[in-house]
Image (cartoon, rainbow, N blue to C red; front, side):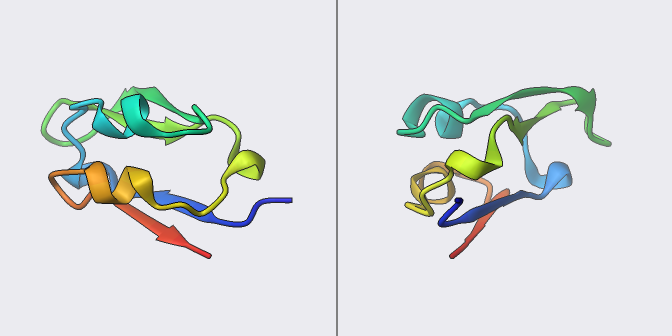
Length: 69
């Protein structure tokens, strides 16, 4: 059972990849869809594995990720 929930705000994401690189559970990936700025924003591949550590949100320079526990 998931301990956290990751919410990506697509319009803020510029696909820098920091959240992908630093997620300890490796559940974030670059998505297929584009936001209004033309970036492939990130998505969560396996939300049930989220521990709610919020490393992804802390690493995001654009505030594109919110984590709920």
